[in-house]
Length: 159
Image (cartoon, rainbow, N blue to C red):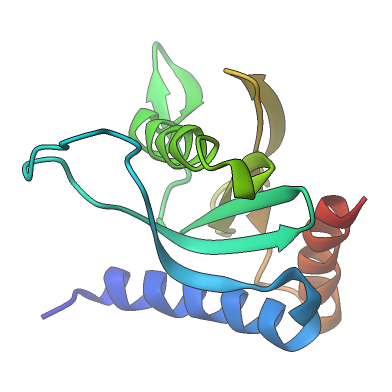
């Protein structure tokens, strides 16, 4: 039986996916998509790579991994850092999807549900030939502002 946090995480993921389906159908939003390992004779012990959300335009693919945690950053030497397991997860999705020539240019985003206990997080970086981003979606504001935040992500892909 899922925990309350797992229920919230699934609700957040579904909200973002359905927003894009309703407002940006041209981006062909899809959820719970398996990414091929790109490994010949992959052993059965390798975990499946299943993304939360994929948005596509011709020549570009954005993989969004939604996260709903009480604390967005972890601490290392008294410094707030992105959780290594989250970074590694989005990195793996993007690198493996990038092996698919039909995917075009592949980028990845960690999208966190904002909390009242932490400041918003927004950062981008390039790694192994791909662009990555981390964003916080502030769900504590009116819907129009939430929509604007999601619209900006979609518009950034379409540029």
